[in-house]
Image (cartoon, rainbow, N blue to C red; front, side, top):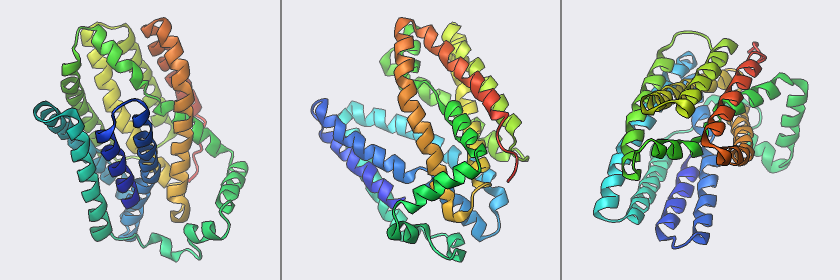
Amino acid sequence: MAASSIAFAASYGLFAMAQNFSSFITPFIFMGIGFAMLSGTDEAYLFDSLKDINKQKEYKRWYGRLTITDEMVTIIGLGVSTVIAYFISPAAVFSFAALAMLLTAIYTFIFIKESKSHTDEPKSTIQAFEQKPLSISKRAISFLKKHAAFIIVLLAFALLDESGRLLWQPRILDLGFTISTLGIVYAGLKLFSIIGAWFSGNLDCKIRRLHFFIIGIFTAISFILVGFGNVYLVISGLALYFLIENVFRVFRSEYLNERVGSKYRATFISLNSFSTSTFAALFVIVLGVVADQRLVYGFLLLAGVKLIASFVSLALPKEK
């Protein structure tokens, strides 16, 4: 977690100094490293920290609270960044962000303690990796061969996670909004993200396949509203998506954490992130080509992907 903060700090610092397109490439690489280091680590750390005090059953509630905090800080960040960019410069926003991430890294080193849940394992994942770097990958492949149902998990969550964000701003601008109002629009929509995180965190039930099926259906509806609606339907569709997005985020996290032991928890959650990111990187090309013909076709494609994801979700494994 500390290393991810340092990578983000390097990324933002390089963004502040970037002068042309080519100089933007390196900070994006550091940003990718930061996300890769954080992916799975934060969720696994939270779950194992609760496990240390025998409160892992409250994970959904605490992850919901974590998500709410994330969204609230995002809203504040939108406002603060606007003020900094207006009174100083857009580049200054990245400088302040780099400083914030450095402080986060220091805070993590000093105040965040290691979870004790992994100490009961005979050998740590790090030790195994140092002895045979490929052994973890081989065991992961062997695991997927023995438990093919988890391939369905990776596929379903990759399909459900796709958001088509590159189409949102063109659609909103088509409705007459200006670039200067986008921050306000997104800040307002983030309120629905907070509602979604609160709802999912306080929902007292076991996460089942049906939940992901319903999430896919509602997400498909949201994209249809965004693609075909007037200004009110488009904003309503985006609001529905922002709400459902965090419901899915919390449900997915609990579903994965409940099915993997502490020794491989972060690794497996990162594997889910890897499959999701790989699909997104390939799909964004297809989505761009389709939307370039007509924007509404892109939203139709997104709705279709969500409907497929809904039915794939019905094949998710039930067992713990």
